[in-house]
Image (tube, rainbow, N blue to C red; front, side):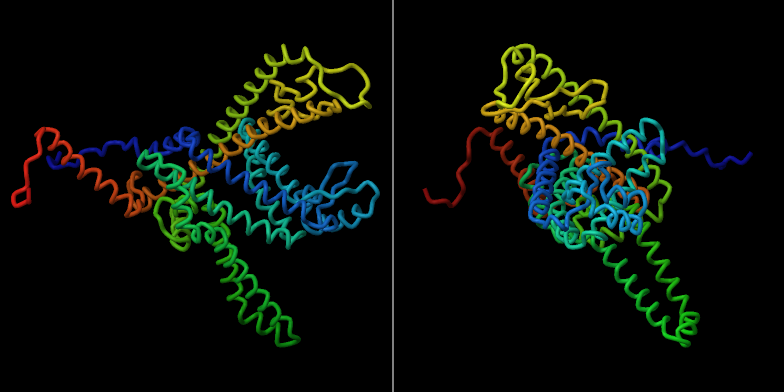
Length: 462
């Protein structure tokens, strides 16, 4: 046997088990700064949607059947554009039809899709999980297809809101995941403001490219519709259409698979939208299987965390109602004169507790059947404020968890493709100057502390 035989290479456990980094997402997500920024983004989105619903003409709102409670969004998710058009034409003139705000339907669909994904993870139903994920872009397609002007205003507002607050959340997650540094609200918002153009443009760039190529293909089809010569030109130049179709498929797959990494790229690298898009596409296509595995693991782990937080809040509200109700239900609420039947307890009339079996919403219900009046009605409004605020915090946790998981996915793929350490992150020059000043001031302060007295400077006037 040769003496210079190579020794067996040791197994690299850290590289093999890199996916365990994704389990840091829960710890990163519960950071108060991220929760506050995410809550602010959700509240701003909610207010913008409600204002649009209130100001939009009733005739332009979404059609909902009062009997079946099916909306045109539900029909679009099931049957597509043509089926929805036919359903609207048959339903909109019926007596039992009603109109609903577009944002209210989107908000209801978001709750249903989130619960569907979480339920699919628990039941190990991959089709249900993917169905819940895909339904999100389909719902936005419905808005653009059937309510284009509403969709234009809403999407611009949504992109602007999340370019600011989402960018701030992504920056906090980037520094927390790489340097274990917890920055404040002002620093995060200042970074989001400085990179606002990049955060705003990054989701629009793939859409712009797709629209541009689509217009070129439609123009080519228009030329091909010319009698006689059109077929000849189409046959000769059809390879150009295939090239455009290839680019469309490339952009669509890269944009969908790498969407979660766009904001973290800008937050980690401090780059612009073009660099962020090129990086995410590069990582997705160089490591497609790792991207898929990391994404599925993050969805599964995130769903379990979401269900745990929901159960925690459900148990908290149930226990609150139980013990407060023991004494509060001794009193009677103020009811309208039209109320008949036995008078419920005061807390039961204001708010119904959630059940621990999961058959009710985790925040309970305010549709108690009691016709409140006076101070009791105002007390219910105040309880709604706190309970719905708690619901908003749960939603903020989901947003924070999304950005935290996306940041970890980006850092892992960056290390595997570019061989960059997980701890490497862009830091502004002002922050570096502050750190350098702090480090240089520390030895000076220590030397003065050791001497105990300050020596006079030679040549200084006394």
